[in-house]
Length: 130
Image (tube, rainbow, N blue to C red; front, side, top):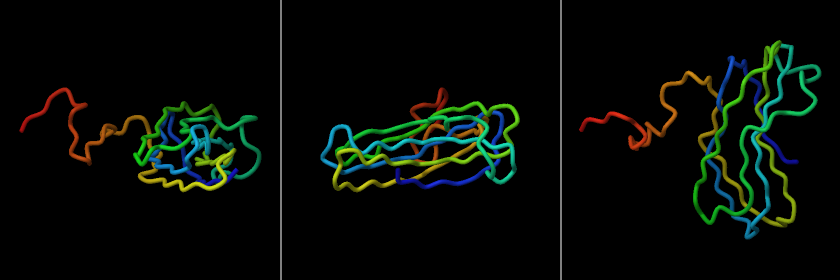
């Protein structure tokens, strides 16, 4: 598995994800997964608290030139002092591909702007004024 990862201090619940664009010519490959591993240490060292990382989000295959959002909500397990977010790529049958990640994020579930506010798209908001 090809991967990028970053250690962070988790809250009780948090979201992780980003935007992905894939050119592979394949329907099922590559597979991009967003995973979280939790640790009892403050620096993501030592054995993980759980046998397998938690899968937060995934995307499979070619995105046909479009940017595709990835996001998921995860509850932090008891005793976790740090977490490792992993953006993993399983190549599969995709012999050659280009994969772009953008706007990757990890934040607590209490964040105010979760609906593309910064893009100017306010369609998800219940009240809008010119």
